[in-house]
Image 1 (tube, rainbow, N blue to C red):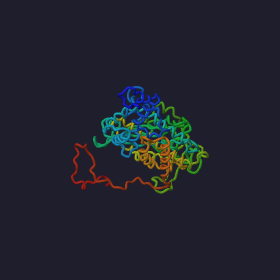
Image 2 (image 1 turned 90 degrees about the vertical axis):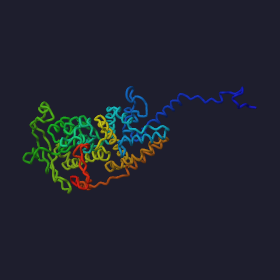
Image 3 (image 1 turned 120 degrees about the vertical axis):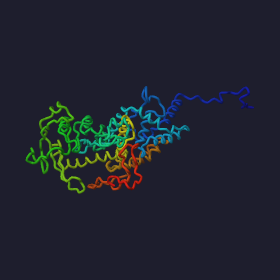
Image 4 (image 1 turned 30 degrees about the vertical axis):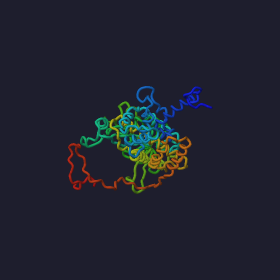
Length: 489
């Protein structure tokens, strides 16, 4: 009879031993463990936009070890934080806990300290490289221009505020008419966008004293020969128009600080309200942002084209304005086409609205200048990635990308994100989810309502709260709130 008892002789221990694992199985198990410690599943939507080499751990120093808050996990956690409606660090920590609960019984700490310290270690150079890659990728997806096949770069500036800390106040001081402790640091932002793809190409950050023109000059490397620079009257400058022309870049801006030329002063009349004129080199003032040597290199005169645009649409703030451009060929660039191009300059206001209002970058959260720069860059990276999804969704459905809602795209991505974070999700299922995400994004069509009047007015009245006119520890609150009326109430 066969003996099954291991205590008696004749029992073979080899029958209880497991088959030894191969090196391939051991390596596969380690890879699986690393994959379970990552939260980069959201990246399946953005493989084309986020270069993986920028998220590889460094060889030594900070973020060199493969821990839960690795370089890859920090980036996607920060990415998710910008994408969230709440936008707080605590929201990200809760999401990390929920994600870790699926894969292990041990949850990360509820404190935001570890996550915030890990964000500080993330190098700014990697974020800058990722931002450049996203803008280049968007340019490749839309290679057509707005005017005769030429790329149009629209430039504008805006402002953001941030927490009232000593470090932020030192770099971005609040307005002088506000008392200390009653205001917030204010930063200026000048950015260049591609008018066709809405991609953010470059940006510069300054304080309240920084003018848009000096910040634009720092971004000259963004422009290439053959591009068209599109800006409002804040960029009407003899020096900059001449600098762009020397680089083979044409300008389309509105006239400011100069008296419009008449037909008597014109070199040639190209058409109705379309004149070929010349500008004389202005006298350099002491407040000029360029040097005496740069001023002396400017030509004595500039040959330009002045187009008067009459606005017949009711609801606009002006009835007419003048456009100054270096596009001198009236046959290749008709006056109506240039006027229509400048009308599309309003898109840059919508781009900033998407970033500041929809993505909540109007009021930043970080308390140090270094983290404020990283927060701004992360918002711009997420913005470009969302634009990329919109382009792919529009191309899949065969519609114009301008018809796709930016806010609707963010809402769809927020709801799809938990499905991408599932642990047992194979490649085929992820592809199916991405296709459904594209259909959901392209399904939200923005109606085209040309000539619609949108006055800059607030309909909802503010609450009758008392204004903070002193620091909080000195402020005395009015007992009866109804006796106080805020300005404009």
